[in-house]
Length: 68
Image 1 (cartoon, rainbow, N blue to C red):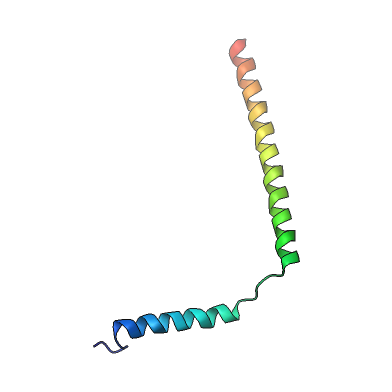
Image 2 (image 1 turned 30 degrees about the vertical axis):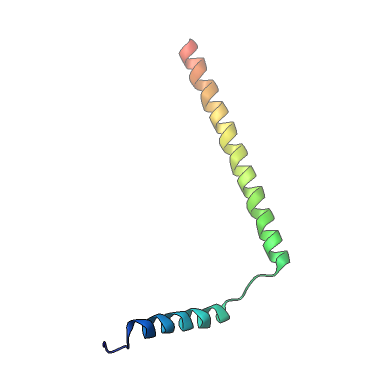
């Protein structure tokens, strides 16, 4: 056996440590989750619209230069 115990003892210690760490976690409330989700969805939409507009602008400029 190794200094830290056997294989199964190390696995048991690993899961005890996971349980201890999860007790330290401060979980968000449902209203915080809803608020953060809304912020993420709005941010994704704003970035998506910006990318779409830039793509349309660059596509229009390329086609106008090619057609001349």
